[in-house]
Image (cartoon, rainbow, N blue to C red):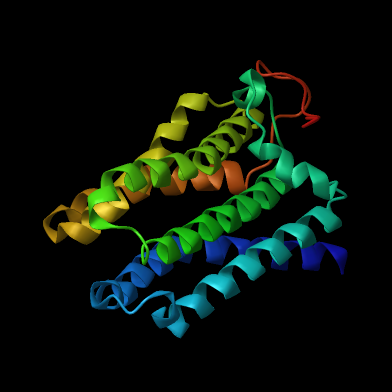
Length: 220
């Protein structure tokens, strides 16, 4: 029963992870006419708010369920956002990777939500400054996501540089949305991205110590 619950929680997080970028893109499409109308924060589309809220809640619940089933301390889920020289070293197992990714996506969506709300109040002449601030807000969760993908690759005894296939997907997705002629590049990038996903999300780590350290990883 516990094993079934574990697989169900992993499946939920996987489906949400796949659809989160598409949901965010749809949210931008919902808000474009609203923002141009200048009706204020009260005019935020209820469908968009519902999407964001449901995804955030589902991600958090999924992460807590995975942590509970695998006896992972809950405070460990947030320690992935702690910047340190060692954040790209070491190994993590599959369970931690799924739980960390769920919390990571939840944090990204929370930031995205507040950014969209803030857009209603930004004066056009200050847009350059706000764009810089917005980019800085996303740096921490994105760095955290890169670090946990690298650590999971290490657990598989793979080079951390394979994370580039994962990162490339972030940039190619919005490009394919803005320029449909480049969609083939995005589709082509899905092949190595899917391979990395299978490696880090579904296959077990190396038995015993490998070139990246012992299998037991302590976040603290």
